[in-house]
Image (cartoon, rainbow, N blue to C red; front, side, top):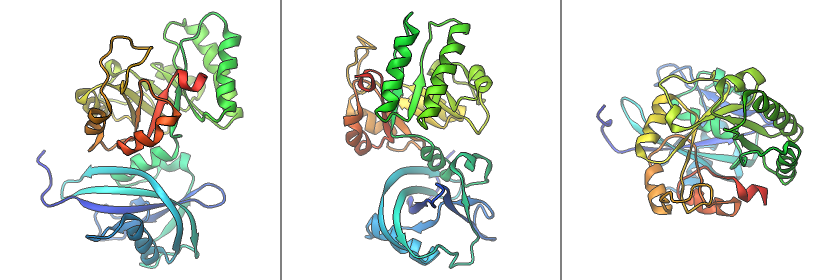
Length: 315
């Protein structure tokens, strides 16, 4: 498909949460493109206008509120048939006033875990995904025979604040994998964390986990889990990133960015190459490989949503 004509339109979007953690959505009016769908409120950034100023102006014009504190959440480049947009989503932490549809648009508050069932413009979907995922993803070390020690390490990480955990146990048999996943899920639920399982969509569905994480080699044109579950993939180059889009995943993990003990001999991408690969990528991206929580600012500066790591979260 040829790219749509004209420059890319920079659109600001605000994520507002109420006291129950629900987010505010606005319905596109009749006659508009994608009429009837629900989006994060906002509008076009004017030439020469700062992003924060544009967000504040749009939310005042659309909702009648005054933004007091906001910070960037996710930038989503998207190509529709008639136009290209950059949807620049910010989380609004504080505002004055009661949101109302000043332009006649309907408003609703929706729980983040139910956003998958709401008709939304495609560019808003990655924002909905990001709202369900912490900035840091812990990938478990391959468990040895000491299940107690393995689970104790998971619990320590959860107690230190890990809220997104990928269970990777590729050498465990089916019975032990089910046992580990059940135990990890129990620990995660006690701390309000989400659990993904590596390479086992059937088990994720059976146990009601939050999602599945796939190796690039397992990507197919059909999602292996329903829309309400998260689905991600490990990617290492542009070809695999493209395959992940075709497969309909919600997020990707890209790396290795730096040298890592878990993949000795693998040529690292480096920060510059990683940033180039994800510059126009529309899904939340976690960078991995020799990184830890302290690398989050650099990862975000490179265009990633967060960082993933193994040892850094176990230390």
